[in-house]
Amino acid sequence: MIGPRPVNLIGVAALITDPYGRVLLARRVTSGRWGLIADLCELGEALDVTLRREVHEESALTVTDAHLIDLLCPDRLSEVPNGDQFYSYTAAYRVTAWHGTPQPDGHELAELRFWAPAELSGLPLTRLGRAALAWQV
Image (tube, rainbow, N blue to C red):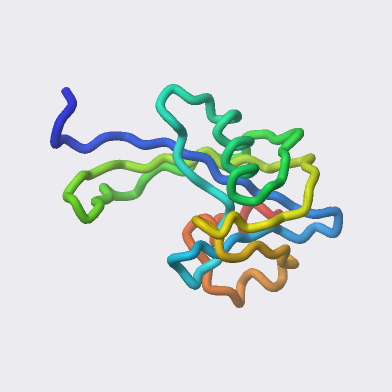
């Protein structure tokens, strides 16, 4: 049944590291917190396709290899200002090969930067930024 009932949404997150082991974090235009490049799947879109599309759209990087490392399940029902409710699931991928120079799109992302793992704990992080701490090991 579709209508005013809650729905499930699924998206992806990209844990991208450079050759020095630093993780690429993004700061969204609307936030001062740092997190992974992430977004929702388009209707009927495969997760790996979403990963490659979103990383390229938001950072100008081309993902050439990645593998699923985790599936984050919702701990609560979320609601947007118009009253729509949803449960959000996130498929997290470790990007093992990529090329290009990270450039924020300027629409969704204001800044992209590689951070050493030791620097992450001192940053204001999103939920996915905090998850990256665990995935770094």
